[in-house]
Image (cartoon, rainbow, N blue to C red; front, top):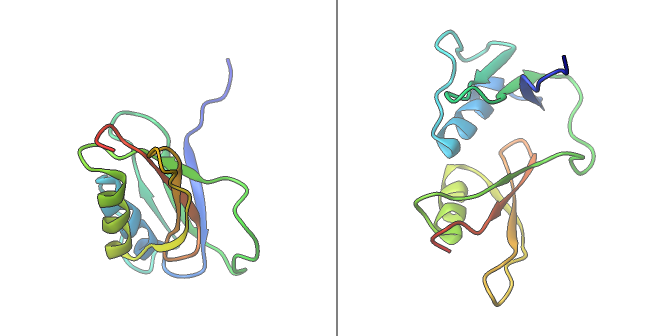
Length: 124
């Protein structure tokens, strides 16, 4: 009888479709079939039934650090490879907190400035 998390929602001042395309490419998940440029929202569903990522246009811009962010763990790539791929897709590097022993994380921002972290994966 408890609620479930349906979506994690990202506010964006630009086109939600554009930001959803960044996350779709990064996560390898498709946008909803009925989403198109200029729509007020765009959705990336989780094919395994988990929460989707919903991108919604808002008027006010981001003014402070996110109070919630995603921690991502690479699969099939090293953290360094995944960070390089995210940067190629349009992310921005904020901080590299990789430790000498390989633990730690890298903090990035998506094209709208939303922070996310890339942790070490099984390949390093």
